[in-house]
Image (cartoon, rainbow, N blue to C red; front, side):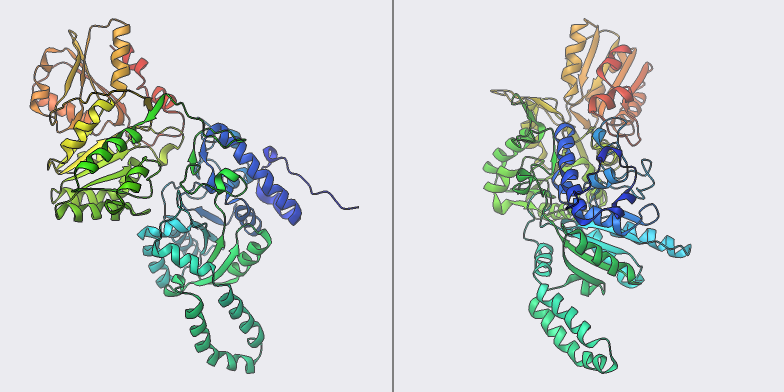
Length: 616
Protein backbone atom coordinates (compact mmCIF):
# COMPACT_ATOMS: atom_id res chain seq x y z
CA UNK A 1 0.00 0.00 0.00
CA UNK A 2 1.40 3.39 -1.03
CA UNK A 3 2.37 5.60 1.89
CA UNK A 4 0.54 8.92 2.07
CA UNK A 5 2.85 11.96 2.10
CA UNK A 6 3.24 13.51 5.53
CA UNK A 7 1.60 16.93 5.86
CA UNK A 8 3.27 19.55 8.07
CA UNK A 9 1.37 21.91 10.36
CA UNK A 10 2.93 25.17 9.21
CA UNK A 11 1.95 27.03 12.38
CA UNK A 12 3.96 24.63 14.55
CA UNK A 13 7.28 24.91 12.68
CA UNK A 14 10.13 25.97 14.98
CA UNK A 15 13.16 25.59 12.70
CA UNK A 16 14.05 24.07 9.31
CA UNK A 17 15.62 20.85 10.64
CA UNK A 18 12.46 18.83 9.92
CA UNK A 19 12.94 19.39 6.18
CA UNK A 20 15.77 16.85 6.06
CA UNK A 21 13.41 14.07 7.16
CA UNK A 22 10.90 14.60 4.34
CA UNK A 23 10.69 12.76 1.03
CA UNK A 24 10.53 14.70 -2.23
CA UNK A 25 6.83 13.97 -2.57
CA UNK A 26 6.34 15.36 0.94
CA UNK A 27 8.44 18.40 0.03
CA UNK A 28 6.26 19.02 -3.00
CA UNK A 29 3.17 18.85 -0.80
CA UNK A 30 4.85 21.24 1.64
CA UNK A 31 5.59 23.64 -1.22
CA UNK A 32 1.93 23.70 -2.23
CA UNK A 33 0.84 24.25 1.38
CA UNK A 34 3.35 27.08 1.85
CA UNK A 35 2.08 28.79 -1.28
CA UNK A 36 -1.50 28.61 -0.13
CA UNK A 37 -0.54 29.85 3.34
CA UNK A 38 1.29 32.84 1.85
CA UNK A 39 -1.71 33.63 -0.38
CA UNK A 40 -4.09 33.35 2.60
CA UNK A 41 -2.08 35.66 4.86
CA UNK A 42 -1.10 38.25 2.25
CA UNK A 43 -4.70 38.49 1.04
CA UNK A 44 -5.54 39.76 4.54
CA UNK A 45 -2.36 41.61 5.55
CA UNK A 46 -1.05 42.87 2.22
CA UNK A 47 2.62 42.45 1.39
CA UNK A 48 4.94 41.12 -1.29
CA UNK A 49 3.14 38.27 -2.99
CA UNK A 50 4.57 37.37 -6.40
CA UNK A 51 8.23 37.36 -5.35
CA UNK A 52 7.46 35.04 -2.44
CA UNK A 53 5.38 32.57 -4.45
CA UNK A 54 8.27 32.21 -6.87
CA UNK A 55 10.85 31.46 -4.17
CA UNK A 56 9.16 28.62 -2.26
CA UNK A 57 11.08 25.58 -3.58
CA UNK A 58 14.41 27.40 -3.75
CA UNK A 59 14.06 28.41 -0.08
CA UNK A 60 13.24 24.82 0.90
CA UNK A 61 16.24 23.53 -1.05
CA UNK A 62 18.51 26.11 0.56
CA UNK A 63 17.29 25.24 4.07
CA UNK A 64 17.85 21.51 3.39
CA UNK A 65 21.32 22.07 1.95
CA UNK A 66 22.62 24.54 4.53
CA UNK A 67 22.32 25.05 8.27
CA UNK A 68 21.41 28.71 8.53
CA UNK A 69 21.76 28.70 12.31
CA UNK A 70 25.49 28.64 11.42
CA UNK A 71 25.66 29.29 7.69
CA UNK A 72 24.58 32.75 6.54
CA UNK A 73 22.06 33.79 3.91
CA UNK A 74 21.48 37.32 2.66
CA UNK A 75 18.27 37.87 0.69
CA UNK A 76 18.76 40.71 -1.78
CA UNK A 77 16.01 43.31 -1.18
CA UNK A 78 14.49 40.84 1.30
CA UNK A 79 10.98 40.91 -0.15
CA UNK A 80 11.11 37.17 -0.98
CA UNK A 81 11.77 35.90 2.56
CA UNK A 82 8.24 34.79 3.58
CA UNK A 83 8.87 31.05 3.11
CA UNK A 84 12.12 31.46 5.04
CA UNK A 85 10.26 33.22 7.86
CA UNK A 86 7.74 30.37 8.09
CA UNK A 87 10.44 27.68 8.02
CA UNK A 88 12.39 29.44 10.76
CA UNK A 89 9.43 29.59 13.13
CA UNK A 90 8.03 33.13 12.89
CA UNK A 91 4.45 34.18 13.63
CA UNK A 92 3.63 34.52 9.95
CA UNK A 93 -0.05 35.32 10.37
CA UNK A 94 0.92 38.65 11.98
CA UNK A 95 3.57 39.56 9.44
CA UNK A 96 3.85 43.33 8.79
CA UNK A 97 1.49 44.05 11.70
CA UNK A 98 2.50 46.07 14.76
CA UNK A 99 4.64 43.86 17.04
CA UNK A 100 4.53 41.06 14.44
CA UNK A 101 7.38 39.95 12.17
CA UNK A 102 8.71 42.38 9.59
CA UNK A 103 8.12 41.75 5.91
CA UNK A 104 11.90 41.90 5.48
CA UNK A 105 14.83 40.12 7.22
CA UNK A 106 15.29 41.40 10.76
CA UNK A 107 18.24 40.51 12.95
CA UNK A 108 16.39 41.00 16.24
CA UNK A 109 13.69 38.52 15.19
CA UNK A 110 15.74 35.36 14.84
CA UNK A 111 19.22 33.85 14.82
CA UNK A 112 18.40 32.85 11.26
CA UNK A 113 18.50 36.47 10.06
CA UNK A 114 22.13 37.59 9.82
CA UNK A 115 21.62 40.76 7.79
CA UNK A 116 18.86 43.31 7.13
CA UNK A 117 17.90 44.86 3.83
CA UNK A 118 15.06 46.46 1.93
CA UNK A 119 16.81 47.98 -1.07
CA UNK A 120 18.11 46.19 -4.15
CA UNK A 121 21.58 44.93 -5.06
CA UNK A 122 23.28 44.90 -1.64
CA UNK A 123 23.51 41.15 -1.05
CA UNK A 124 26.79 40.32 -2.82
CA UNK A 125 28.72 43.12 -1.10
CA UNK A 126 27.27 42.12 2.27
CA UNK A 127 28.02 38.43 1.67
CA UNK A 128 31.61 39.29 0.82
CA UNK A 129 31.99 41.29 4.02
CA UNK A 130 30.52 38.49 6.14
CA UNK A 131 32.73 35.90 4.43
CA UNK A 132 35.87 38.02 4.79
CA UNK A 133 35.13 38.38 8.53
CA UNK A 134 34.67 34.59 8.70
CA UNK A 135 38.05 34.00 7.07
CA UNK A 136 39.85 36.57 9.24
CA UNK A 137 38.49 34.83 12.34
CA UNK A 138 39.34 31.40 10.85
CA UNK A 139 35.76 30.21 11.12
CA UNK A 140 34.08 27.65 8.89
CA UNK A 141 30.63 28.15 7.41
CA UNK A 142 29.00 28.92 4.07
CA UNK A 143 27.77 32.37 3.01
CA UNK A 144 24.95 32.60 0.44
CA UNK A 145 23.66 35.65 -1.43
CA UNK A 146 20.20 35.12 -2.92
CA UNK A 147 19.67 37.77 -5.61
CA UNK A 148 17.14 38.37 -8.40
CA UNK A 149 18.10 39.04 -12.01
CA UNK A 150 16.61 42.56 -11.93
CA UNK A 151 19.07 43.57 -9.20
CA UNK A 152 21.86 43.32 -11.77
CA UNK A 153 20.61 46.56 -13.28
CA UNK A 154 22.13 48.39 -10.30
CA UNK A 155 25.84 49.13 -10.54
CA UNK A 156 26.46 48.10 -6.93
CA UNK A 157 26.33 44.46 -8.03
CA UNK A 158 29.15 45.01 -10.50
CA UNK A 159 31.26 46.91 -7.98
CA UNK A 160 30.98 43.83 -5.76
CA UNK A 161 31.69 41.34 -8.56
CA UNK A 162 34.75 43.29 -9.67
CA UNK A 163 36.11 43.20 -6.12
CA UNK A 164 35.18 39.52 -5.79
CA UNK A 165 37.27 38.80 -8.88
CA UNK A 166 40.31 40.13 -7.00
CA UNK A 167 39.59 38.73 -3.53
CA UNK A 168 38.32 35.27 -4.59
CA UNK A 169 36.33 35.13 -1.34
CA UNK A 170 34.32 31.91 -1.06
CA UNK A 171 30.67 32.85 -1.30
CA UNK A 172 27.78 31.22 -3.13
CA UNK A 173 25.64 33.54 -5.26
CA UNK A 174 22.21 32.16 -6.14
CA UNK A 175 20.74 34.15 -9.02
CA UNK A 176 16.96 33.83 -8.98
CA UNK A 177 16.10 34.55 -12.63
CA UNK A 178 12.40 35.10 -13.28
CA UNK A 179 12.81 37.69 -16.07
CA UNK A 180 10.90 40.15 -13.89
CA UNK A 181 11.56 43.23 -11.82
CA UNK A 182 8.45 44.64 -10.12
CA UNK A 183 6.84 43.95 -13.48
CA UNK A 184 8.23 42.58 -16.74
CA UNK A 185 11.93 43.39 -17.17
CA UNK A 186 12.82 45.96 -19.77
CA UNK A 187 15.02 44.69 -22.61
CA UNK A 188 18.26 45.60 -20.84
CA UNK A 189 21.55 43.95 -21.72
CA UNK A 190 21.38 42.04 -18.44
CA UNK A 191 17.97 40.51 -19.12
CA UNK A 192 19.33 39.33 -22.47
CA UNK A 193 22.45 37.92 -20.82
CA UNK A 194 20.40 35.84 -18.39
CA UNK A 195 18.08 34.70 -21.15
CA UNK A 196 21.07 33.53 -23.18
CA UNK A 197 22.46 31.73 -20.16
CA UNK A 198 19.07 30.08 -19.68
CA UNK A 199 19.11 28.86 -23.27
CA UNK A 200 22.59 27.41 -22.98
CA UNK A 201 21.76 23.88 -21.86
CA UNK A 202 23.62 22.45 -24.85
CA UNK A 203 26.83 24.12 -23.79
CA UNK A 204 26.44 23.21 -20.14
CA UNK A 205 25.57 19.64 -21.03
CA UNK A 206 28.45 19.21 -23.47
CA UNK A 207 30.87 20.68 -20.93
CA UNK A 208 29.81 18.10 -18.33
CA UNK A 209 29.97 15.21 -20.81
CA UNK A 210 33.49 16.17 -21.92
CA UNK A 211 34.73 16.39 -18.33
CA UNK A 212 33.16 13.05 -17.36
CA UNK A 213 34.50 11.31 -20.46
CA UNK A 214 38.06 12.57 -20.48
CA UNK A 215 38.89 14.02 -17.07
CA UNK A 216 39.50 10.82 -15.11
CA UNK A 217 42.81 9.61 -16.70
CA UNK A 218 46.17 11.09 -17.68
CA UNK A 219 45.41 10.35 -21.36
CA UNK A 220 41.98 11.97 -21.02
CA UNK A 221 43.42 15.07 -19.37
CA UNK A 222 45.89 15.40 -22.23
CA UNK A 223 43.00 15.33 -24.67
CA UNK A 224 41.15 17.97 -22.64
CA UNK A 225 43.81 20.59 -23.39
CA UNK A 226 43.23 20.81 -27.17
CA UNK A 227 39.51 20.53 -26.49
CA UNK A 228 39.68 23.81 -24.56
CA UNK A 229 39.77 25.71 -27.83
CA UNK A 230 36.73 23.78 -29.01
CA UNK A 231 34.97 24.55 -25.71
CA UNK A 232 35.73 28.23 -26.19
CA UNK A 233 34.32 28.12 -29.73
CA UNK A 234 31.25 26.19 -28.59
CA UNK A 235 30.57 28.54 -25.73
CA UNK A 236 30.65 31.60 -27.91
CA UNK A 237 28.35 29.95 -30.46
CA UNK A 238 25.80 28.83 -27.90
CA UNK A 239 26.08 31.62 -25.32
CA UNK A 240 26.15 35.18 -26.52
CA UNK A 241 27.82 36.28 -23.30
CA UNK A 242 28.38 34.63 -19.91
CA UNK A 243 28.90 37.63 -17.70
CA UNK A 244 30.37 35.55 -14.88
CA UNK A 245 33.26 34.42 -17.08
CA UNK A 246 34.35 38.07 -17.17
CA UNK A 247 34.66 38.02 -13.38
CA UNK A 248 36.26 34.54 -13.35
CA UNK A 249 33.49 33.17 -11.18
CA UNK A 250 32.46 29.53 -11.52
CA UNK A 251 28.98 29.13 -12.98
CA UNK A 252 26.43 26.34 -12.40
CA UNK A 253 23.21 26.61 -14.35
CA UNK A 254 20.65 26.83 -15.47
CA UNK A 255 18.72 24.95 -12.81
CA UNK A 256 14.96 24.58 -12.49
CA UNK A 257 14.21 26.75 -9.45
CA UNK A 258 11.10 24.69 -8.69
CA UNK A 259 12.96 21.34 -8.67
CA UNK A 260 14.22 20.83 -5.13
CA UNK A 261 16.35 17.79 -5.94
CA UNK A 262 18.13 19.52 -8.84
CA UNK A 263 18.88 22.56 -6.71
CA UNK A 264 20.24 20.41 -3.89
CA UNK A 265 22.69 18.81 -6.29
CA UNK A 266 23.82 22.23 -7.47
CA UNK A 267 24.22 23.50 -3.90
CA UNK A 268 26.26 20.42 -3.00
CA UNK A 269 28.61 21.09 -5.91
CA UNK A 270 28.91 24.73 -4.95
CA UNK A 271 29.80 23.92 -1.34
CA UNK A 272 32.72 21.78 -2.53
CA UNK A 273 34.41 24.69 -4.31
CA UNK A 274 36.96 26.78 -2.43
CA UNK A 275 36.22 29.89 -4.48
CA UNK A 276 33.17 31.97 -5.40
CA UNK A 277 30.47 30.28 -7.43
CA UNK A 278 27.22 31.37 -9.07
CA UNK A 279 24.19 29.09 -9.23
CA UNK A 280 21.68 30.29 -11.82
CA UNK A 281 18.12 29.12 -11.14
CA UNK A 282 15.07 29.79 -13.30
CA UNK A 283 11.79 30.46 -11.54
CA UNK A 284 8.30 31.72 -12.31
CA UNK A 285 7.42 34.85 -10.39
CA UNK A 286 4.03 34.35 -8.75
CA UNK A 287 4.06 30.59 -9.34
CA UNK A 288 1.00 28.68 -8.20
CA UNK A 289 -1.57 31.50 -8.30
CA UNK A 290 -3.02 32.22 -11.72
CA UNK A 291 -3.40 35.96 -11.15
CA UNK A 292 0.21 36.47 -10.11
CA UNK A 293 1.59 34.22 -12.85
CA UNK A 294 -0.19 36.32 -15.50
CA UNK A 295 0.74 39.66 -13.92
CA UNK A 296 3.27 41.42 -16.18
CA UNK A 297 2.73 44.92 -14.76
CA UNK A 298 3.56 44.17 -11.12
CA UNK A 299 0.12 44.66 -9.58
CA UNK A 300 0.74 41.72 -7.20
CA UNK A 301 4.39 42.49 -6.47
CA UNK A 302 3.56 44.59 -3.43
CA UNK A 303 -0.17 44.29 -2.92
CA UNK A 304 -2.84 45.34 -0.45
CA UNK A 305 -5.72 43.12 0.61
CA UNK A 306 -7.23 41.06 -2.21
CA UNK A 307 -9.84 38.40 -2.89
CA UNK A 308 -7.91 35.13 -3.17
CA UNK A 309 -10.72 33.51 -5.18
CA UNK A 310 -11.25 36.18 -7.84
CA UNK A 311 -7.86 37.86 -7.53
CA UNK A 312 -9.56 41.26 -7.22
CA UNK A 313 -7.44 43.73 -5.29
CA UNK A 314 -9.65 45.41 -2.71
CA UNK A 315 -9.89 49.14 -3.35
CA UNK A 316 -12.23 51.87 -2.25
CA UNK A 317 -13.53 53.43 -5.46
CA UNK A 318 -14.18 56.69 -3.64
CA UNK A 319 -10.46 57.08 -2.97
CA UNK A 320 -7.50 57.89 -5.18
CA UNK A 321 -3.75 58.11 -4.62
CA UNK A 322 -1.43 61.08 -4.58
CA UNK A 323 0.67 59.22 -7.16
CA UNK A 324 -2.28 59.14 -9.54
CA UNK A 325 -3.15 62.81 -8.94
CA UNK A 326 0.42 63.92 -9.67
CA UNK A 327 0.75 61.63 -12.68
CA UNK A 328 -2.47 62.96 -14.24
CA UNK A 329 -1.31 66.57 -13.98
CA UNK A 330 2.20 65.75 -15.14
CA UNK A 331 0.63 64.11 -18.20
CA UNK A 332 -1.08 67.39 -19.10
CA UNK A 333 2.16 69.34 -18.69
CA UNK A 334 4.09 66.91 -20.89
CA UNK A 335 1.33 67.07 -23.49
CA UNK A 336 1.72 70.84 -23.85
CA UNK A 337 5.44 71.22 -23.11
CA UNK A 338 7.59 69.09 -25.40
CA UNK A 339 10.71 70.21 -23.55
CA UNK A 340 9.88 67.97 -20.57
CA UNK A 341 10.69 64.32 -19.85
CA UNK A 342 9.88 61.83 -17.07
CA UNK A 343 12.32 59.41 -15.42
CA UNK A 344 11.71 56.61 -12.92
CA UNK A 345 13.71 53.63 -11.50
CA UNK A 346 11.40 50.64 -12.15
CA UNK A 347 8.48 52.21 -10.25
CA UNK A 348 6.13 53.14 -13.08
CA UNK A 349 3.30 51.03 -11.62
CA UNK A 350 3.60 52.26 -8.03
CA UNK A 351 3.79 55.88 -9.15
CA UNK A 352 0.91 55.52 -11.66
CA UNK A 353 3.07 56.49 -14.63
CA UNK A 354 1.79 53.91 -17.14
CA UNK A 355 -0.15 56.44 -19.24
CA UNK A 356 2.89 58.69 -19.51
CA UNK A 357 5.04 55.67 -20.33
CA UNK A 358 2.60 54.58 -23.05
CA UNK A 359 1.92 57.93 -24.69
CA UNK A 360 5.34 59.61 -24.39
CA UNK A 361 7.61 56.71 -25.31
CA UNK A 362 10.50 58.91 -26.46
CA UNK A 363 10.27 61.15 -23.40
CA UNK A 364 9.84 58.54 -20.70
CA UNK A 365 12.86 56.73 -19.26
CA UNK A 366 12.43 53.74 -16.95
CA UNK A 367 16.07 53.12 -16.07
CA UNK A 368 15.48 49.99 -14.00
CA UNK A 369 16.79 49.70 -10.45
CA UNK A 370 19.38 52.42 -10.94
CA UNK A 371 18.55 55.47 -8.84
CA UNK A 372 22.00 57.03 -9.11
CA UNK A 373 21.95 56.78 -12.89
CA UNK A 374 18.41 58.19 -13.02
CA UNK A 375 19.56 61.32 -11.19
CA UNK A 376 22.66 61.93 -13.31
CA UNK A 377 20.64 61.24 -16.46
CA UNK A 378 18.38 64.06 -15.28
CA UNK A 379 21.44 66.28 -14.73
CA UNK A 380 22.62 65.67 -18.28
CA UNK A 381 19.19 66.41 -19.72
CA UNK A 382 18.82 69.57 -17.66
CA UNK A 383 22.31 70.80 -18.55
CA UNK A 384 21.27 70.63 -22.20
CA UNK A 385 18.02 72.54 -21.82
CA UNK A 386 15.44 69.77 -21.22
CA UNK A 387 13.46 69.79 -17.97
CA UNK A 388 13.33 66.34 -16.26
CA UNK A 389 10.69 65.18 -13.80
CA UNK A 390 12.32 62.43 -11.72
CA UNK A 391 9.73 60.26 -9.99
CA UNK A 392 11.23 58.29 -7.12
CA UNK A 393 10.07 56.80 -3.82
CA UNK A 394 11.53 58.69 -0.88
CA UNK A 395 13.24 55.57 0.47
CA UNK A 396 15.07 55.06 -2.84
CA UNK A 397 15.95 58.74 -3.23
CA UNK A 398 18.42 58.21 -0.37
CA UNK A 399 20.57 56.29 -2.82
CA UNK A 400 20.89 59.40 -4.98
CA UNK A 401 22.06 61.81 -2.30
CA UNK A 402 25.50 62.33 -3.83
CA UNK A 403 24.11 62.80 -7.32
CA UNK A 404 21.52 65.34 -6.14
CA UNK A 405 24.26 67.30 -4.37
CA UNK A 406 27.17 66.95 -6.79
CA UNK A 407 25.47 66.73 -10.16
CA UNK A 408 22.18 68.61 -9.81
CA UNK A 409 22.31 71.17 -7.01
CA UNK A 410 25.97 72.14 -7.36
CA UNK A 411 25.38 73.16 -10.96
CA UNK A 412 21.96 74.58 -10.03
CA UNK A 413 20.29 72.49 -12.74
CA UNK A 414 16.54 72.86 -13.07
CA UNK A 415 15.03 69.48 -12.16
CA UNK A 416 11.79 68.41 -10.49
CA UNK A 417 12.03 65.59 -7.94
CA UNK A 418 8.62 63.94 -7.51
CA UNK A 419 9.16 62.25 -4.15
CA UNK A 420 6.54 59.53 -3.79
CA UNK A 421 5.80 57.75 -0.47
CA UNK A 422 7.06 60.77 1.52
CA UNK A 423 6.35 60.51 5.23
CA UNK A 424 5.48 57.40 7.22
CA UNK A 425 4.70 54.40 5.01
CA UNK A 426 3.22 51.98 7.51
CA UNK A 427 3.65 48.23 7.21
CA UNK A 428 6.80 48.15 5.08
CA UNK A 429 8.63 49.50 8.12
CA UNK A 430 12.04 51.00 8.76
CA UNK A 431 13.69 50.12 5.45
CA UNK A 432 11.06 52.02 3.48
CA UNK A 433 10.08 54.99 5.64
CA UNK A 434 9.93 58.20 3.59
CA UNK A 435 10.79 60.51 6.46
CA UNK A 436 14.44 61.41 5.81
CA UNK A 437 14.44 63.03 2.36
CA UNK A 438 13.38 66.51 3.48
CA UNK A 439 16.08 66.56 6.14
CA UNK A 440 18.91 65.51 3.85
CA UNK A 441 17.73 67.86 1.11
CA UNK A 442 17.96 70.64 3.71
CA UNK A 443 21.73 70.00 3.83
CA UNK A 444 22.08 70.66 0.08
CA UNK A 445 22.13 74.20 -1.36
CA UNK A 446 19.85 75.18 -4.27
CA UNK A 447 17.00 72.91 -3.21
CA UNK A 448 13.33 73.89 -2.92
CA UNK A 449 11.01 71.62 -0.91
CA UNK A 450 7.19 71.72 -1.11
CA UNK A 451 4.19 69.54 -0.31
CA UNK A 452 0.58 70.05 -1.35
CA UNK A 453 -2.32 69.58 1.05
CA UNK A 454 -4.89 69.09 -1.70
CA UNK A 455 -4.98 68.22 -5.42
CA UNK A 456 -5.88 71.84 -6.17
CA UNK A 457 -2.29 72.82 -5.33
CA UNK A 458 -0.54 70.23 -7.49
CA UNK A 459 -0.62 72.06 -10.80
CA UNK A 460 0.78 75.23 -9.25
CA UNK A 461 3.74 73.33 -7.78
CA UNK A 462 4.47 71.42 -10.99
CA UNK A 463 4.37 74.48 -13.21
CA UNK A 464 6.44 76.52 -10.72
CA UNK A 465 9.06 73.77 -10.62
CA UNK A 466 9.93 74.36 -14.29
CA UNK A 467 10.83 78.01 -13.66
CA UNK A 468 14.56 77.59 -13.05
CA UNK A 469 14.60 77.17 -9.27
CA UNK A 470 17.35 74.53 -9.35
CA UNK A 471 16.36 71.27 -7.65
CA UNK A 472 12.63 71.49 -6.89
CA UNK A 473 11.46 68.66 -4.62
CA UNK A 474 7.71 67.98 -4.43
CA UNK A 475 6.80 65.45 -1.76
CA UNK A 476 3.59 63.42 -1.51
CA UNK A 477 2.22 60.79 0.80
CA UNK A 478 1.41 57.10 0.39
CA UNK A 479 -1.94 57.68 2.10
CA UNK A 480 -5.12 57.69 0.04
CA UNK A 481 -7.34 60.73 -0.43
CA UNK A 482 -10.93 61.29 -1.46
CA UNK A 483 -11.61 61.74 -5.18
CA UNK A 484 -12.71 65.24 -6.08
CA UNK A 485 -14.64 66.42 -9.11
CA UNK A 486 -14.14 69.76 -10.86
CA UNK A 487 -10.98 70.70 -9.01
CA UNK A 488 -10.16 74.41 -9.23
CA UNK A 489 -6.41 75.00 -9.26
CA UNK A 490 -5.00 77.32 -6.61
CA UNK A 491 -2.46 79.94 -7.54
CA UNK A 492 0.43 79.77 -5.09
CA UNK A 493 3.38 82.13 -5.29
CA UNK A 494 6.86 80.66 -4.91
CA UNK A 495 7.67 80.13 -1.22
CA UNK A 496 4.26 81.34 -0.08
CA UNK A 497 2.50 80.14 3.07
CA UNK A 498 -1.26 80.34 3.68
CA UNK A 499 -3.26 81.37 6.73
CA UNK A 500 -6.10 78.87 7.16
CA UNK A 501 -7.48 79.81 10.58
CA UNK A 502 -7.00 82.96 12.66
CA UNK A 503 -6.72 82.74 16.44
CA UNK A 504 -5.32 84.79 19.31
CA UNK A 505 -2.37 83.40 21.28
CA UNK A 506 -1.37 80.12 19.65
CA UNK A 507 -0.34 79.34 16.06
CA UNK A 508 0.22 75.95 14.50
CA UNK A 509 2.50 75.83 11.46
CA UNK A 510 2.09 72.63 9.48
CA UNK A 511 1.84 71.31 5.94
CA UNK A 512 0.67 68.40 3.79
CA UNK A 513 -2.68 66.58 3.67
CA UNK A 514 -2.91 66.32 7.45
CA UNK A 515 -3.49 70.10 7.62
CA UNK A 516 -7.06 69.66 6.34
CA UNK A 517 -7.86 67.17 9.11
CA UNK A 518 -6.21 69.44 11.66
CA UNK A 519 -8.29 72.45 10.62
CA UNK A 520 -11.48 70.38 10.70
CA UNK A 521 -10.73 69.12 14.22
CA UNK A 522 -9.88 72.60 15.53
CA UNK A 523 -13.14 73.95 14.09
CA UNK A 524 -15.14 71.08 15.61
CA UNK A 525 -13.67 71.84 19.03
CA UNK A 526 -14.04 75.62 18.57
CA UNK A 527 -10.43 76.28 19.58
CA UNK A 528 -9.05 79.81 19.32
CA UNK A 529 -5.94 78.83 17.34
CA UNK A 530 -4.28 80.09 14.15
CA UNK A 531 -3.32 77.50 11.53
CA UNK A 532 -0.67 78.38 8.96
CA UNK A 533 0.02 76.06 6.03
CA UNK A 534 3.71 75.98 5.06
CA UNK A 535 3.22 74.68 1.51
CA UNK A 536 6.89 75.48 0.89
CA UNK A 537 9.06 74.17 3.71
CA UNK A 538 12.14 75.51 1.96
CA UNK A 539 12.91 78.34 1.43
CA UNK A 540 11.52 79.94 4.59
CA UNK A 541 10.83 83.49 3.40
CA UNK A 542 11.01 86.44 5.76
CA UNK A 543 7.54 87.46 4.63
CA UNK A 544 6.15 84.20 6.02
CA UNK A 545 7.57 84.98 9.47
CA UNK A 546 6.13 88.50 9.64
CA UNK A 547 3.58 88.81 12.45
CA UNK A 548 4.45 85.54 14.21
CA UNK A 549 6.00 87.41 17.15
CA UNK A 550 2.52 88.29 18.41
CA UNK A 551 1.82 84.67 19.38
CA UNK A 552 2.83 83.46 22.84
CA UNK A 553 3.05 79.86 21.60
CA UNK A 554 3.97 78.40 18.23
CA UNK A 555 3.55 74.69 17.50
CA UNK A 556 5.55 73.37 14.56
CA UNK A 557 3.73 70.24 13.43
CA UNK A 558 5.58 68.08 10.88
CA UNK A 559 3.92 64.71 10.31
CA UNK A 560 5.94 63.92 7.17
CA UNK A 561 9.63 64.28 8.05
CA UNK A 562 12.06 64.21 10.95
CA UNK A 563 12.65 67.08 13.33
CA UNK A 564 16.13 67.83 11.93
CA UNK A 565 14.74 69.37 8.73
CA UNK A 566 11.95 71.93 8.51
CA UNK A 567 11.16 72.03 12.24
CA UNK A 568 14.70 72.83 13.33
CA UNK A 569 15.24 75.32 10.50
CA UNK A 570 11.99 77.15 11.28
CA UNK A 571 12.92 77.28 14.97
CA UNK A 572 16.25 78.93 14.11
CA UNK A 573 14.48 81.37 11.79
CA UNK A 574 12.01 82.34 14.53
CA UNK A 575 14.81 82.89 17.03
CA UNK A 576 16.62 85.11 14.50
CA UNK A 577 13.51 87.31 14.24
CA UNK A 578 13.60 87.80 18.01
CA UNK A 579 10.68 85.53 18.86
CA UNK A 580 10.41 85.23 22.67
CA UNK A 581 7.44 82.89 23.07
CA UNK A 582 7.21 79.13 23.54
CA UNK A 583 8.12 76.91 20.55
CA UNK A 584 6.86 73.32 20.59
CA UNK A 585 8.10 70.91 17.93
CA UNK A 586 5.89 67.94 17.14
CA UNK A 587 7.68 66.08 14.37
CA UNK A 588 8.88 62.57 13.60
CA UNK A 589 11.96 61.81 15.71
CA UNK A 590 15.21 61.23 13.87
CA UNK A 591 15.20 57.47 14.30
CA UNK A 592 14.23 54.31 12.45
CA UNK A 593 10.51 53.59 12.73
CA UNK A 594 9.26 49.99 12.85
CA UNK A 595 6.33 48.62 10.88
CA UNK A 596 2.73 49.28 11.91
CA UNK A 597 -0.11 51.17 10.27
CA UNK A 598 0.54 54.87 9.66
CA UNK A 599 -2.10 55.74 12.28
CA UNK A 600 -0.44 53.44 14.84
CA UNK A 601 2.96 54.94 14.06
CA UNK A 602 1.70 58.50 14.54
CA UNK A 603 0.03 57.59 17.80
CA UNK A 604 3.16 55.84 19.06
CA UNK A 605 5.36 58.81 18.09
CA UNK A 606 3.02 61.33 19.71
CA UNK A 607 2.19 63.15 16.46
CA UNK A 608 -1.41 62.12 15.87
CA UNK A 609 -3.92 64.98 15.55
CA UNK A 610 -5.37 64.07 18.95
CA UNK A 611 -1.93 64.49 20.52
CA UNK A 612 -1.55 67.88 18.85
CA UNK A 613 -4.97 69.02 20.08
CA UNK A 614 -3.99 67.96 23.62
CA UNK A 615 -1.13 70.49 23.78
CA UNK A 616 -3.16 73.47 22.56
